[in-house]
Amino acid sequence: MRTIYALSLILTLTFSVKSQTTWKMVSAGTEYGFALRSDSTLWCWGFNGNGQLGTGNPGTQAPVQLGTEHNWIKVACGAFHTLAIKSDGTLWGWGLNSVGQISSNQLNQVDTPVQIGTDQDWVSIYAGLAHSAAIKSNGTLWMWGYNDYGQLGIGNTNVTSVPTQVGTDIDWQSASLGGAHTLALKTTGQLFAWGFNFAGQLGNNTQVDASSPTQIGSATWKNVSSGYLFSCGVQTDGTAWSWGYNGNGQLGLGDVQPRSLPTQIGNGDTWDRIVAGSGFSYGVTLDNQTWSWGYNGQGELGIGTQQQQTSPSPVANFFAPESNGFSTLALSVGATDASGSTLYGEHVIGINVDTYSLCASGANYQGQLGLGSTTASLSFQCGIGDLSALETIVSTLVNVSPNPASGEIHVEVETANTI
Image (cartoon, rainbow, N blue to C red; front, side):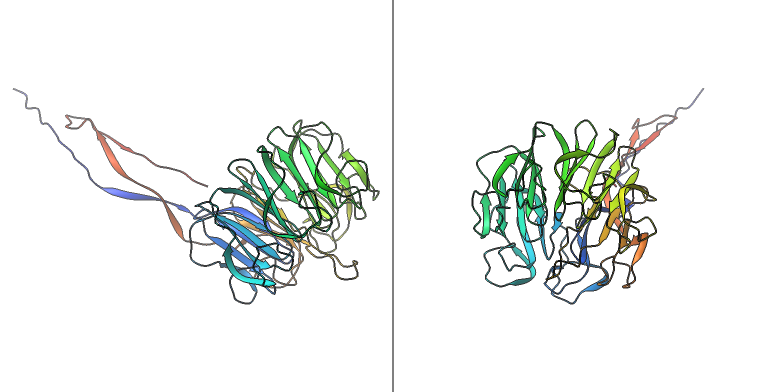
């Protein structure tokens, strides 16, 4: 006679699956930087003479957390001001406010985050030298701040300190703000430009400023980026293009001659994105190969030298892909001094594709590399602000089957992964 035992298991144990907290977004200001962590906290470092760090404290040479909140989802640095969006869709700003680039607050400087308006439907933000932009969930584009060259796209050159809608279109996908000009893409991939056009940076084959959106050609674009006096981007066929000022080789065309129409960089069609800075550019291919070109006086090209490059040069660092508006490679648009001869904004911040750690290269006189010093670097230094804290990804029950059981039992655990 054989005895059969029935085993009935009811497990109510819960446990937490934990993962190393990682960085998911970076943005670079003229002499400072910001990064967003996967736990929705904001971290900043560098110069804070205009309140651009938002901490209300002096500048710092290493990353420090902005406040204690865990509800930030986007951040964008201008030259001396910062914008951010919270998880509830509200818009916030801080830093230099001399021309209303933050809000209608009459103070020239905002030291800690202030809410801009009361709307709760903001999804994307962009900051330039002294002007700002944001897109709402309904596809409308709004701009405010400095407007002497029509860079707000509202049909005039009047400064405005409150978000003002650009036209009536509801199909804006993204924007990029330069020194005093703006590029923007529609959901169809069509490119529009407006603002300052001294060097042909609008790409419409003129040097005439535009105060309203002007379509540039008929090509469709994957992404575009505004530099200080130049522009660049990648079309949907994977080709790379640039136009505008080129005195430092920032167009990547092998010379220093300006262009007033988009001109192809090389003949490759495997580009993923290009990011424009003050006087230099970075490009990333579909296989995560990184290239840089242009001004390199402080090592901002990350190639180990200070030699200017007029054509793309390989960078020994791979940066994480970008998705859902999270920038993983940031160059400051920068500014010049009163004489117009000295360029600022000469550093780069990126997120490494393998470790998701912060990396930086270039000028560091205000601690803008976040390395804990003011020593410049000619190549990328990684591991900036690395944290050992673990974040809880999910808590779950242990599932056992069959239950009741006779003989074999199976234990199943649900887990979740995040970057």
